[in-house]
Length: 475
Image (cartoon, rainbow, N blue to C red):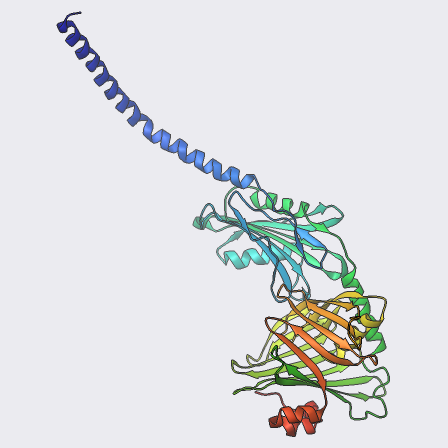
């Protein structure tokens, strides 16, 4: 082939390539917009499929309750796989965040220690409607409420759902379920979505409900039985003993981890026997020395079965002062903030709920120490108005101790590792109490003379112990 023929062929091929490039650009331009649309649709479909493929965590157990749940995780769902305490219950959450602010979803399970009073509670249908009105406001178009019952093994979950239209802001849906457990406990399940994908919230709800696992360990019912036995016996079965007409006062010195005396506690109790019943009057005083001393004064007025009581606690610390008042009537606890002058919360208590005051806890501890029930759980109403499960168990005596002491261990089951161990003498009197928290403290039984020598600034108060029942709390 001559050079001229080669040049001609190369020129011809170059013309073909130019024509092909031109047509290729034309085709690409024509296909660009449809391709972008297809990619967008595929991306949206991937997100939808991610939501549709709901994966759950392994069962997350709530310590001491016999309950475990599985929550959505992965494919856009985030979950810490941990129960968190929140004053009167425990919560575990799962959140979906892939789509952004306009396309969100969350799931929540709440294990209730105490229920809202009948005035604040309601059926699942009432709950979802009230929640929808609170979220959507007056402009929301709320649809009809749907209800039903979902079987979760031996458990039944009553549920209700509602969809609301927010106009330009889109739709949202709420599904709420209520599952009754033993000993008055309840599990709430709530799923919320702002996506327009139909059925997402209901599918998530049903998957969570289906995986509920519950095995009653009997400890809470055992606690309720012990509390009931103490109620029947009465805090002061025979009013007051003749040799204690003015009541009884118990004092402890507080030692820190360095075995330095930093404060003391003082508890007093008196009883008045009427023709109808016995009225209990108790008081407590907590003092820790400092440039600005930490003080807490509690006054407790109750019937002999502590089903009706008025408990007032005021404290003065370096952080300021605060006061709480709690009253129970017909099983309902009302908590008021004294500084704000208003009623804050109202709860329907369980049968195992008792106030955190020595005169009530001591007979419960001794029941575990001596009775057939060596481990129980009760609901402790704390001085700040919160309610926490308290695990109580008998601890075998230390055989290595020269004077073996019988022990009871009580642990707050709120995940913060707060516990106390109470040591008893052979006469069943408390000799010392060891507290385990961020720091360790030991309370050692003492008399008025010992505490006066350690804390002379409080001598006037310690010598006249009747003042405790009459003392005004710090303001």
